Image 1 (cartoon, rainbow, N blue to C red):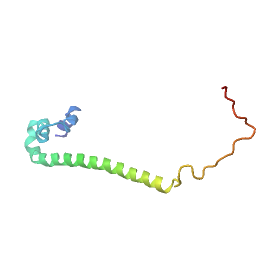
Image 2: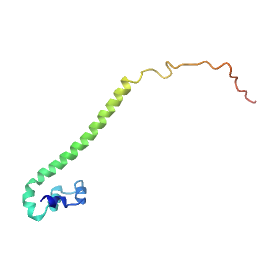
Image 3: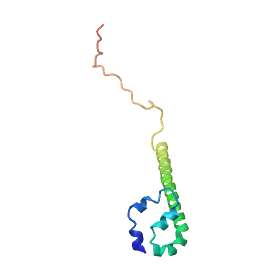
Image 4: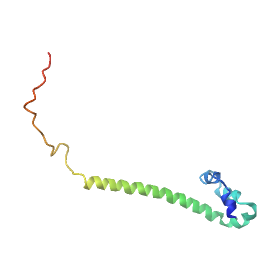
Amino acid sequence: MVAGFSAGGGSSLNDIAGVGDLGESILADVPEPFRAQVEPFVPAIVDGIHQAFSLATAATFAVGIVTALLAALLVLFVLPARRMGEDAEVTAPDARLEPIATAD
């Protein structure tokens, strides 16, 4: 029975996210002698696949939200809070430099 599932090839992995009845697709890939044994478990298999996709999607969003919050906290607490131009060192122009004369 295990050899029958592993002989499905790479195309069976692409069928999981396809459109249509997933239960029928799973049963179509099961060898004929084992269909009666696998058929009662098909609804649980389909529910497990749906839950796995839902959890994976939720985990992806959770990682994004957590990293965005950490970045916001980093900017809020670590970077110095001051207005633009405040505490900027203003240097006087060098007296040795002469202004450029413009030709009028």
